[in-house]
Length: 348
Image (cartoon, rainbow, N blue to C red; front, side, top):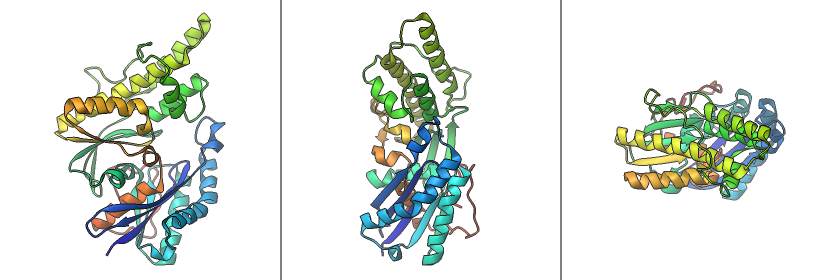
């Protein structure tokens, strides 16, 4: 008998509610994916303001859930289990989602699972491309996280191979966009500008690629600083800022490091499939370069469509479905949000 899983996401500035159907054969079918973003409320600050995000979640949670059920043609009583992001993320924002999930689960008297936001970014790929092979390598790239992960079982066994030691890739995009007077968030406008520029125009540094650097860790702080200094020098020289060239050269440096390390990790781990997810996975150059290098290395590349890459409730529902199918324990009703939850803890 198939089961309907509801997923609730509120780790940052998107309120997401997703609904999936877990079939008897383990297949997971997407039924609804509704998101309410508060990004416009944060734009004037150049980044996410936790208190603003929390209040936005409070206002958006019920309307977003109602839209999800209307889209799926389901009622609350049709839900068999609920999964909610327990961490990592902003403490106040997470608490809104956890509180809502507890209320729904208590009222419906159904199982509740507290799950990992990062694992959700991996599980969401199954909604588009089907079951994940074992093992699979995941490159998770977002505003807050840049990680290489070995995934033996998305419901129970994820191992971090490398992570960023400073700025995440998405954070670097936001900071460089500010330097170039481009809108927040920085990913889309830099990607758009880069299409008109020359990626070889400026030789920006590739962080943590030296022989003594950690093999699978990342660093984008130096790259961000290099862009800022280049722009400052150009302004002082009065030569003008070729925004497309700066954007393209910066983006090339990011994509080069991400894909090179991912291919290296896949080869050393003996893994034949790479999944790229997270908001930055929607970047056109990252996808293009990853496809080229994966083809050369004989590695299968899986990238969810852009809508599924960014934070959403569907990814939490998908992970919840895999956790349910694996027979993992239900979360105790007194569990709390865990802002620093590590990726190794898939569910509470």
